[in-house]
Image 1 (tube, rainbow, N blue to C red):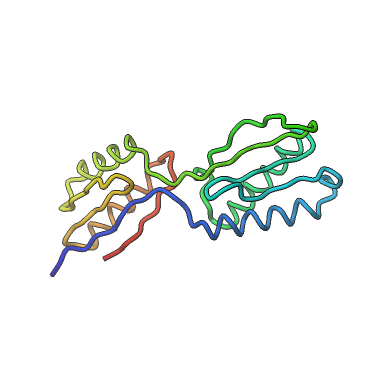
Image 2: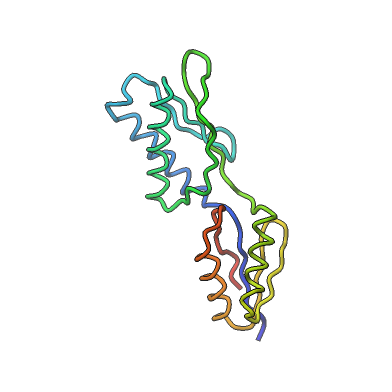
Length: 163
């Protein structure tokens, strides 16, 4: 029997983020406290989100709406790299939010070290942007997944490419 394997990656489902942005934009457009502020929540490139409004407090409120929609769509808030609010032309305020899509090397090394410390018969391989874990027993792989989930990492980890 061939070895079973899976990959540990950082990132989120882009479609779910898109749905969260659309829901947040709809809610901001209909809420009374955003009336007349011309608040915008939209994509700004492939991996960035733009939140813009008439004032800094309205930007922060719109950002909270976006976070709430992300949580409801099961998008990890660890995937959002949120900048500080800044003023832009016309007295408006803006926040840039970028998506975390790559696994930091120091975190990858720590995960590999943690996997090896379990003494299970699995082989973790750091492949740059992901970690491949292979082993003969699927139960061992499930234990590794549970162990990685139990540790609170600063990146949105997901398990993909089951074989």
